[in-house]
Length: 118
Length: 266
Image (tube, rainbow over all chains, first blue to last red; front, side, top):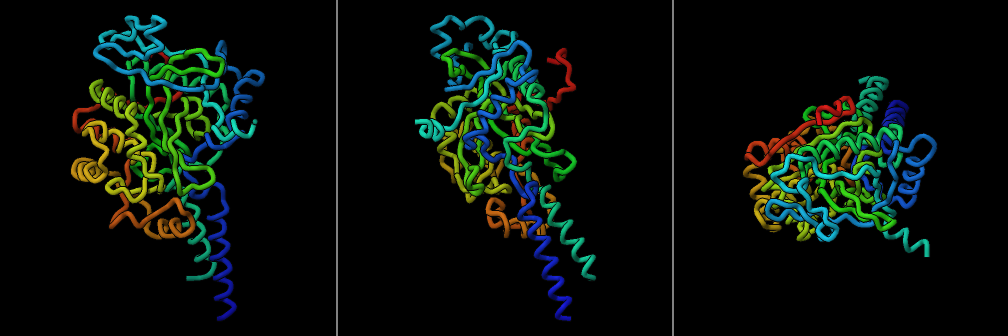
């Protein structure tokens, strides 16, 4: 009887351990890849290596993204206004697609990685 | 119950806990980098063709057949049409994605992170995107809220994978997305008011996972917290947020994008 109880406890423990230590167990999909210091560098390499490069596209890392402010019928950011991109494609009455860069843009390294490099 | 049967039952029950959640935390990719980048660009161009300045975006972090009934996407965020300055100082135009992510070294805590479509789809198990484009007037309000720091104001860093969207005890990515939408619509970041409105108008998705699995999940994983729910577990999902927008005439367009979609559909 005692032996069976011990067996049951061992099996239970093993099963629970499999839950805790199996990588695919309860891990979430929205864990922050951005906080892995090396992941962005790995990603950049993977995108640029050999024939992985998307045809005709440059791979860039982003420094900052400024949302386009929707004012009236036109979407603008300060930068766009200054470089004359406030064209018909941006007018909300237009049926043309919003301009999208062909470049493949990925996030830069986390701020902590910047400190490590100094 | 015999020992063998007991062991089999317990093992199956515990392993099937994975249906509660998405994929493992990883920078691994399951598709060729070029495929991921092309798919991400496809999603951008589709959204740009619909002139979406702001839209709700969902991805699939684990195979669809392992997801609980009613859950089609495992991570949800807000995509914002932006001017992006690259590391060489050039200006590019595309979507920046405003996410709530778990912290890598503390999965019971979250942080707000901006990434880009190729980052967003990097670790997916299926190349599939949920797109919900609000009406332009709603997009304007969400954009104004984001520019005014509302996303930070309605962020609760205490994370739970199965957070109850009707209270602010814990929070996950979908609840945060819903908070931002509602904060924008109601022009308030008062959490009590936002949750009262959510209770009144938002239909959360019941999660068909047994109490047994949730119990073991909450015991062994800090990021699975059951105590903010009374009764049946209900969560915010991409689909329930899309349905909410549609129900109150706030939605312009929604679709699911896969690589099979031809470019003619754009």
